[in-house]
Length: 398
Image (cartoon, rainbow, N blue to C red; front, top):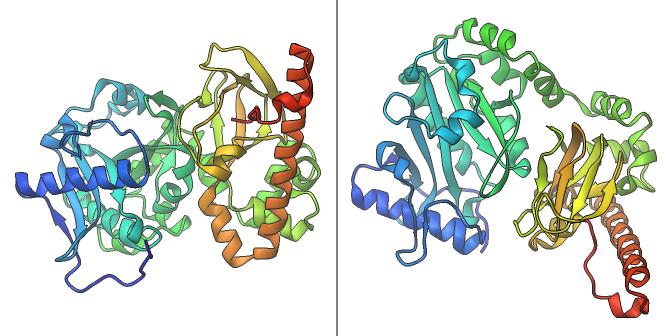
């Protein structure tokens, strides 16, 4: 379906007022999350072709629509009106926010934008409306969580990482929080919400409290603000050598070309024992290991070890290229840092710097060939048969 850049007349952000509005949103979610993205979201009902969770009943549902169609939607849950589910209470580390009342907290979730409107301002318009509503209710902290592939857009909006990752039925999730009063941070990350925030009275009290409570969050914020040159220096320090010397993805690129490629990634920190990828889940991001080591395992986290990757290695490239289900589980053997690179990032690179993108794709194909050859050798040794019998076996890169 062709994407459009200009929204039709009559487009506005609306609040679901009745059961009819809510049903339209539940069906829209299904059409986007299940039909378009082939996802399996909580609350999925194939019989009614809806996606509806109990928390919807006491939350505010926003949707961007014209007279003819719904373009996108998101859900706002206020702490006072709807208790946060226990799993999210733990995942968001909310015990550390006991200095604040429930009425100071909100949760943004369940957003979806149709294929026709992805890559347009549609999602930013929805988040801007949610921001205004939350400011008018004097909300201080808005929480969300996302897959590693969605880190960059959330950080550009003004959300920041502050605590450990957690896993749910859909895979690894990164908890994030936005400090609605921290206008300075919104300006630093060039958030589209900055101009809106300037219209409200601001206070530094929340930001000061947060900085003292979660000092490690400051480093994550600093990474978001780095330019290409400083980010290159940071990666060199992590890898103990220039990135293009240790990352196969950058082979044959000049320093300047490599800087542009690496700058599109987002750094993610994971703890020992965390599964970055689980066999069978969908994903379109790949990972470049900056520090520590990971192990590829057959089946789940307790499965048989297949391979181990160290600094500079990439993994997850099969799903990155083809959007197939992950073929194995990848577990952190130690505390690690990875650079997350998504399919969308490569697509943008192809449009803006096609020659560089071609070199990157060529390097990816070499990595796949090398791993297929290695996998074939291993299988032929284990089973004592000809390599040709294993030519169709999948690689071990998940």
